[in-house]
Image (cartoon, rainbow, N blue to C red; front, side, top):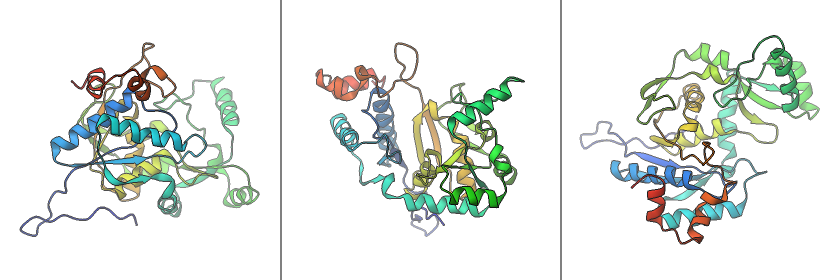
Length: 306
């Protein structure tokens, strides 16, 4: 069972609302840019206005791309911006057992199955289907997994895993939705289409998402849900590019019996090409701007916070 934060009682002994908890959770796979500054500073400002606390989390489960020098640069950039966070910093790579435990609960419920196709094999399967008709894509534009491995029997699955084949563990979304019914979340920001207040989750749009791989016992979706619960996060403030990912997070929260935070999705800072900023774009990297004697107050102005 995933433990939640401590219960808070009022002066009369009745349950009281805990102080709000906000967090900023970058991945150390590149240098922070203006878009990260907008997200971090928005979290800090909202935490201060609500009389809450602000946490920093390092999402470093992807050990092939995450590097220590990028993590150190995150601390340096945030210090320069004047951001102060509570200690200790939670580093996902140090808490893999938490994610294994959550994954195990979903497996015990019969909601997880292994798929063995490579990305290229899945692409070929989708291409074959698209000869006949268009194939659905998730909100990020990626084609949905066709679900071919779902029909494999348990002996076949176990044999292939025992023989060392690469695999991904997927959530059986159809079964999860059938178990949970309709879900929603509370939104104080806005989605890409202006969605706000009570937003209906649409997890079917994502298909059978990956929860873990052979070499990594978790995924972004699973670890972020577990971390927010373990850290007692009450308000998730992040960019609109993650708005519809909340549908998947609400499914996992409900399956794992975790409380849902309040969500606030903010606008994105776009580059000259009209696309969201990337860590590979050095012109908007905070360390590059700092090297050109840009001040923290200038960053606030450039991010539209002043």
